[in-house]
Image 1 (cartoon, rainbow, N blue to C red):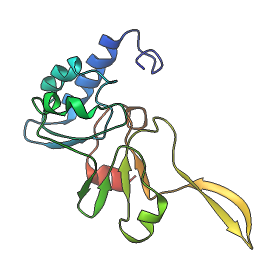
Image 2 (cartoon, one colour):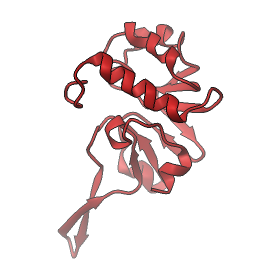
Image 3 (cartoon, rainbow, N blue to C red):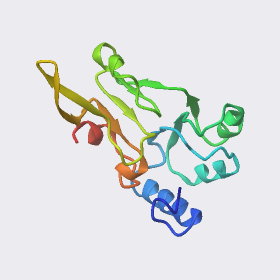
Image 4 (cartoon, rainbow, N blue to C red):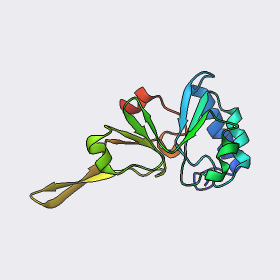
Length: 156
């Protein structure tokens, strides 16, 4: 993944993420990591200790259940999804129907530099595809590797 993202090595990638994180997150800030902490490995969890703030993890598709105990040695909590201030925080984008009646927005990761879209229909015919603004993707590539505040995300 590091090379795909334009880094020369995993070490350079991880150092960049740590530096960007610590440039904006203070010791007492509460943060949410929306999945894929590592690629099915628990050894890199120790890197989490270098990140400022109180860290809560929402599990991703590359995070393994059998590693949760080890992950909890480095973060404050682990969950499948989190309701926060009326929003839903997930790794994968949730089904659009959930946003029709349960949550106004879904803050998520998983899709890297892609966005969730919706089709626009007129008289039963698809006329356009547009970004679905109910979804806010916070994958590293989408936020320039810098954690964002909830206010920043909602005012985009």
